[in-house]
Image 1 (cartoon, chains in turn brown, yellow):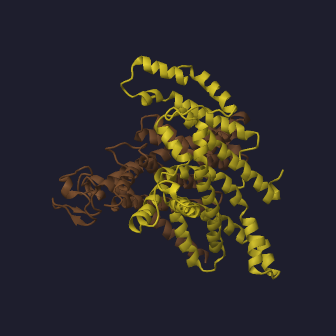
Image 2 (cartoon, each protein chain N blue to C red):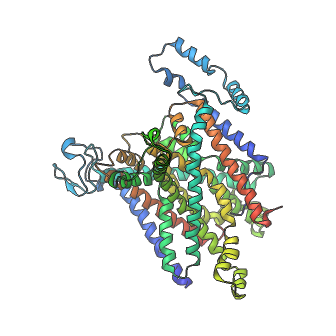
Image 3 (cartoon, rainbow over the protein chains, first blue to last red):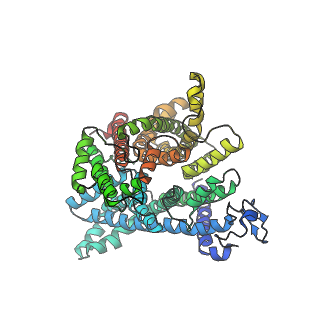
Length: 280
Length: 320
């Protein structure tokens, strides 16, 4: 029974990971996979609102149809994946760095620093993230870089907590004490002896965070506060699809489905990473 | 998840103060100001200076901050720059809409989420559990604004059943009391469904985990071995222990719920705090942004305190 379970979940995990890799490949290879320039309009009146699968006047097949300006939805989806995935990944990288740093320092430093850092972590957890994002995005000039920074700086807390918890659980262990006694510097103790214990749960949290970051970026772009045109992310594609919901539902459906699939895949991968390490 | 929530009753005001200070600094350090949005590009320097001093924006930031705090402490949140109306009146108008939407969606998503999770944790058929898991992962992964889009497409444009915008029809004032209630409920349906569906996904996923953790506990085996009926074992022994961490989730999920409400309100033009906040942020309406942020911080902190109190009530082990 338990063997079968693990085989099943293994299979699910492989499918989810394969999907993520596929989407990432699609994003990287967009210039070669996209049949048409994502911003190419051609004859707007003739080409707009073509249903998925139609062949346009210029002879190009529109796999997912066209939007109200006659742009190919499939091409825009591929190019949108570049922005969405890149912003999500970079934001997660920022969160990982900040979280590991704060969690690690909190575990190793003396009491006052620890209390301060954990206090800051709890405080940041309590701040409604979207409210903060809205403020930051609206108050500064919206841009991809700003979205990366704000998503990263509001997403590091779970990672800091995990790194702190896993590291401080190891601190009293004999092998850590002997490493310290042998004269290892705190940074070495942390990187070589403490951090590896947190790898599984931290990767799980980071994968979940990636899904969150992609959703939130799309949300900000949806409100017009994220990545700015002519760059398009899945969020701005959904927003433009919302305006043509009657004439061309596929414009908003396609990027949304892509987004949901990616987030589901992230969740499944994260679940599995977390289960391998019972501490998570 | 059994960790103690980071709030005592003493730390709660500190968190609110921190959020307020952070918001104030972010607003005032950022480039761009409400005056240029208010007056437009054609304003003369004299007009700008007059407006600035009328709004108190020519004072040093520290002084504005202290002044704001002092007035907010007395319950005076000033006047909205964009609309010229008292901020408190704006909040008082927006508050009930958000309370109804978020309150109902919390109640529904917890009821239904716990029900789904209970089925998953107690069923003997793996297929049922797997299918429901797939369903809840999908629900939890749905971004509110896109689910809203799909629901609007289906129920408003294709089926023509439900309205997609606002909290009441244009003719609401001319309807009888019964019809008016129906009109309200019609308008509530789609935003509520959006928030609730996503909420069910998150709640069910979390609850399934805690119920499965408890499933193999010795006291459940004992209870069954004693011959207690299945329903009684489920209600008195399984759920009672398995749902303890869910109480914590309730408190901790308030920020996420509020965030979800911001997007959903923006999409459905639901006249609540979320929409007020989005509009105020876009218009750089400092007083409204400050008040709405304060309110959301208070709500979030209050949620955590309530959750902690509830946790102490239901789980004697957490009382110290």
